[in-house]
Image (cartoon, rainbow, N blue to C red; front, top):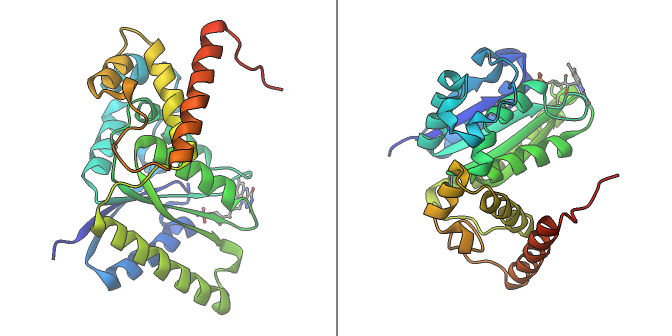
Length: 264
Ligand SMILES: Cc1cc2nc3c(=O)[nH]c(=O)nc-3n(C[C@H](O)[C@H](O)[C@H](O)COP(=O)(O)O)c2cc1C
């Protein structure tokens, strides 16, 4: 049996010393017990990416116009080739690490031109106290926006990791996550979008439509997405579909009239 190739992005600046890495190693062990796997760990800190300077060349000109494409491009290729990905970040100031956020900024173009459809993903987060949900929500949302299907999540308290009773519970959860991840990869079905994914699709559709003569517009047009309800032809809950269509109409109208909400 061919091993499953899993690509991991570790967003802790503590690299191999981090609980982020150590907890994903537990997941690796659990997956290995089910089916052969090959894990590749990318430590985001070791990419030595400068801060994204916000030039938006990736969005407007094309990803290869990014001044740091030599570092970012190969990671996109690796994600593309992997059977599944894991995004792991500790909680820093009740959010993802600056390191992970910066990396995601380099991948902004994937939100505009997603391609990782059918790629299964797991997100993990580590905190000494709290903030796991905020971080996992953001990691999940980001992977979804790139086209991935997030199939499971694992949030762990690092301050508990030396306690045997807690480790036993981590073991059980890691087994569950590993089981879901392996079976979802093997099944290889496209996930059905949730309501928020439909709304995100409609917002991106609206934006790409208005960017006439841009690389984004062409990308969407080539795929017939301007006339679509979602990126792929997957079953969509009828109620969610109708609601998303209605909201998309309102979004378009308010954008056209300059009536978009101000935020306070
Ligand atoms: C700058 C910084 C900010 C942090 N903010 C939080 C926080 O908001 N909530 C929390 O529970 N822990 C916080 N922590 C603790 C880390 O989440 C904790 O040490 C975690 O184990 C780090 O993960 P790692 O071992 O994978 O690097 C913070 C740590 C650092 C260095």
